[in-house]
Length: 344
Image (cartoon, rainbow, N blue to C red):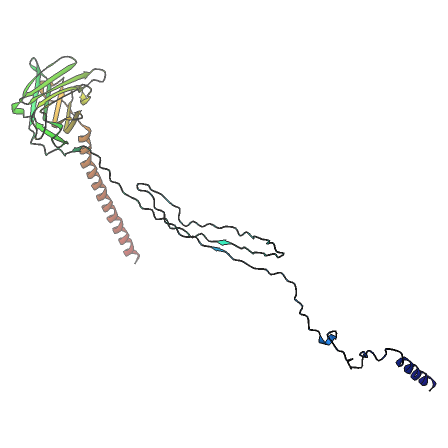
């Protein structure tokens, strides 16, 4: 009790101190607020809004469009373009810092798509007209008579030619076209002359329109004879030809060659005496030197006739082989059939 009385006295003393009632305070834990007046009262002040500080990040996407282009190439040029061009560019991140105390970061994932540009190439075809010579096909040759021409050395025949002869000449007509004209030597209207020596034999055939001169030489080393020189002259007016004189000389021939004492034989042989002068020998057989009694010796065929003679031989051999194969196959099949019957 004494202690309680002491505490009460102490409380009364403290409440009697000066200024103790001038200000009321909130006693902690009492739940009662002290009264206050004026703008300084904390309860009269407005609430403050706190704004958080932050950094704004903007993502910018830029898309570049490529416009298809059409390319027109100049005329008369051929341009080859590789198809389907695809270009891939690498993505580069760009960072841009702007003033005014803020930072803007661009995630610049720039993706550029290049479209394949279809190139249209126009090819111009230019037709160049070049003047050229036109060669007409040779006309159908007229009927050529086969003549029998011979040259004598004394009483013996030293050169004999049995052949149909036809001359072909090429000329330019009034239309600037190259045309071939043909002339057939007529045996009944042809004169024969010539001579023979130990090494050569000559024959000249003369007719109203011109002549043909042949020189055969003997090759003692190879024991052969061949035609070496031909001279020809033709005076004839062909349709549309501005000229009528045609002549040629060829002294570098080695034609109609055969062994000494043999004859040369060919069905159709053409000699090019010059670019515009040809001589055809048809159904030909000839021999110079060593004609016994004026008759031809053993015939040597030209390569063309040799090939022609081989054709029927080859065909006959092939047919014979086929017949043998058929007969053998028949016999083998028949024997097998007999063996099968015996087994049963």
